[in-house]
Image (cartoon, rainbow, N blue to C red; front, side, top):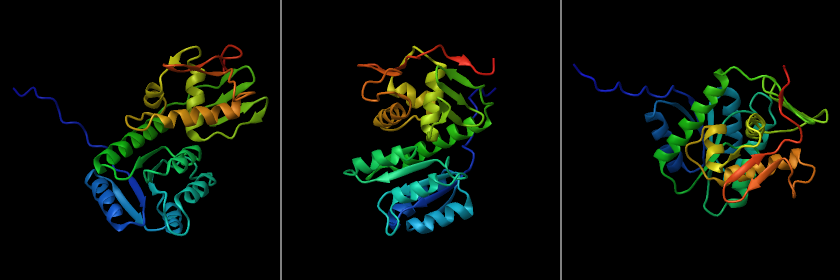
Length: 250
């Protein structure tokens, strides 16, 4: 009798939009994603990318930062300004010297980035990791509201308030704050936060640093001397609630 394990199920196909003006890069990326089982659309400039994102409703966007006309950052800004596209997962393609633009892209809500030259196989793995996380989050039953001092989060409505003032959080910032509220007083490394909050098996750990900094700017009285999200040097980050965290539905 054959007791060999059953083969792993292939990932569920997704519709992916690749926006890159370099035909060679776009062809290679599209080829690898197609062989991974996905349906791929391509655009050669920012405006065309926005048009296809509206028309074809992709599940994920692979976006080059250096584009003719509308650059990648402007495309990302416009997408995040659309309520129906605000949560579209985005992977940026960046040049090695574009660190400032990469950070800005993360602050605008990009999910991850890869630096050129890159391994197409690694890009596919990152894409599939992000898609898996997005689908898991969409199918999971949202938890009840969370409250701590003047902070209140409603996972079902995806809204957060402080002192009755709504906080303008990106999807990644919201998920990070919700996770920290559910685990007060526990230290998490950046690697743990990447995996447990966003399900990323790959990525630059500075991504976490950027999201923590942005979140501090929105919830701390003094982001330069944070009292809620503490840095534990050499380990990671810890949420120190100003008041006990409670389930707002209780």
